[in-house]
Image (cartoon, rainbow, N blue to C red; front, side, top):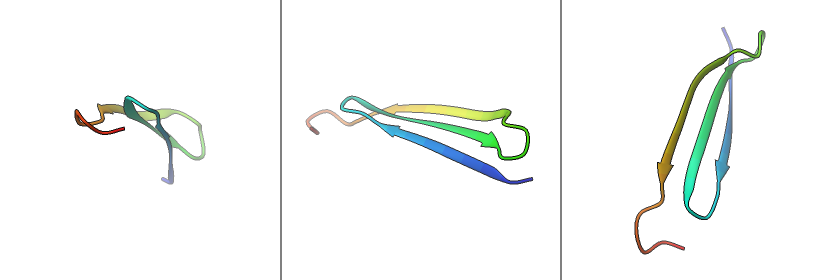
Length: 39
């Protein structure tokens, strides 16, 4: 199985979506805020 990941780093957080490359099914998602004081 091959996976692909999409990453979105915005001003307040980072979001990641991992999908199966063959089926397009979402395998996992995640989100984490940037630490305080970072811009």
